[in-house]
Image (cartoon, rainbow, N blue to C red):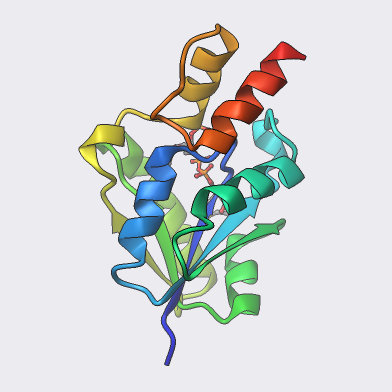
Amino acid sequence: MKRTAIYPGTFDPITNGHVDLVKRGLRIFDEIIVAVAKNPKKAPLFTLKERVMMAKEAVKELGAVKVEPFDGLLIDYSKTKGVGAIIRGLRAVSDFEYELQMALMNRKLDSSIETVFMMPSEEYSYLTSSIVKEVASLNGSTKGLVPEIVEKELKKKFRQ
Ligand code: COA
């Protein structure tokens, strides 16, 4: 049986830290669905369509990875996909409390779906989408921190 996991996030935008986590996930799972949340409460810089496009481009050479948008509860989306695991990254102790809360709430909503935590490479442990956006907005270089497509789209966005 194919083992598929969902890697959910806002991905506003996807960073090399996220891509690193997808690669790590592929060592454990046969297939990963990168699920891009609409997440209007975060008031994303990029539209859902743009975020999906960038994520698709970023993972296109990794093989068994699909990128899809979703809205509503993550657990409902996971159920419609028939997936038994959710992957999340834990970069630092500061991530833990929020991640624990989310994992336990998701378990309460559906105990058949497990959350699996993975550590991203230490090279990216300080990265967040917000910090990348801030650097780009102030004309700083994001080279090596984000996939090339994201670098390009960030430049476009802040030139507008
Ligand atoms: N490398 C780099 N950055 C990472 C990272 C990694 N490995 N892992 C997480 N991050 C960053 C993200 O880019 C994000 O940065 P930002 O805050 O600067 O934008 C931050 O860490 C975490 O953001 P957060 O909003 O906590 O998570 P998310 O964007 O990854 O996604 C959802 C959260 C979408 C999974 C969650 O809100 C969700 O499930 N929503 C659907 C509704 C739902 O089901 N709600 C009930 C949940 S219990």
